[in-house]
Length: 116
Ligand SMILES: [Cu+2]
Image (cartoon, rainbow, N blue to C red; front, side, top):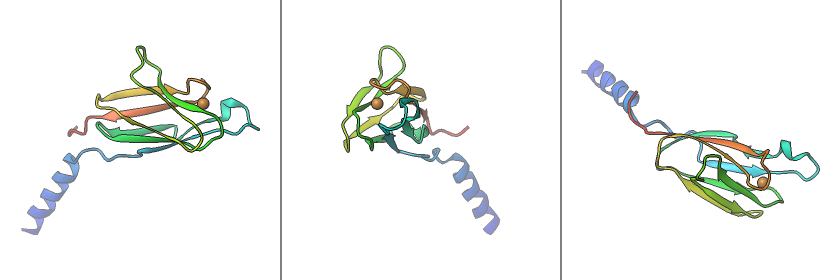
């Protein structure tokens, strides 16, 4: 009986939707440092589709979260202390950058959450 329950638990764990690795991203800058050292922290995240990711501007300059692909799937900006939220429903890899500071680059991996 205990073995059957353990097997059931292991099966459930294997088929559970992929966990959200991060849904909070900091956009940071430092005017004393070159722009190529500014960015998103974490730079790459992995989320289940439908997850709302919050990008918080923790810097002093205006920053955006802009899709690299054309036509732009998303493009939103935030001033110091403001937040931008992004909810992606389509699985895939979404590269993004700051429209004002193109050296700021990030990636959002959107998973479908099904068993693999
Ligand atoms: Cu920027």
